[in-house]
Length: 144
Image (cartoon, rainbow, N blue to C red; front, side, top):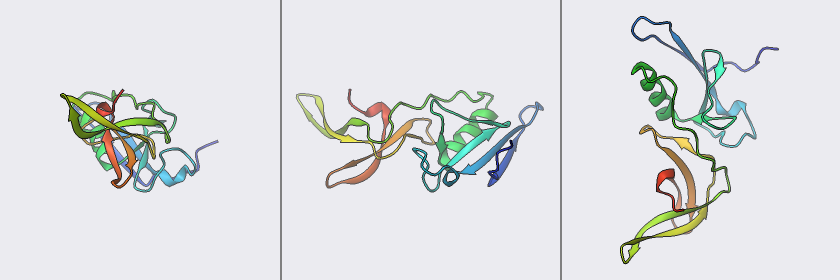
């Protein structure tokens, strides 16, 4: 049975005369209840296969889509970094900008959604800190 969802956008990329690559963008709201499916994000189908970066449902913001298209045009293919295993509610340590004896200090918190890929090719995870609100932290800057 065919997928009843309709693509909101379709992009065809052709590089160096090779076969075109078809990228279809689907609104994340088509997957209600899926972790990481938030307003403004999209799920990608590349050449009729769902694009996954380590998780069953990988959602991208506009910057992540642009990064993927740039990688294809540069001849790098679809080899993006795997999504980190930090589902909503994961305990993490976020650097708070302070240090003691040259050692960075961290605040403990939890993730509020699944990671997303930024335009710089790095994975970011949204966290919330008391009195500071919610913001995205690069996964590679989280404490051990």
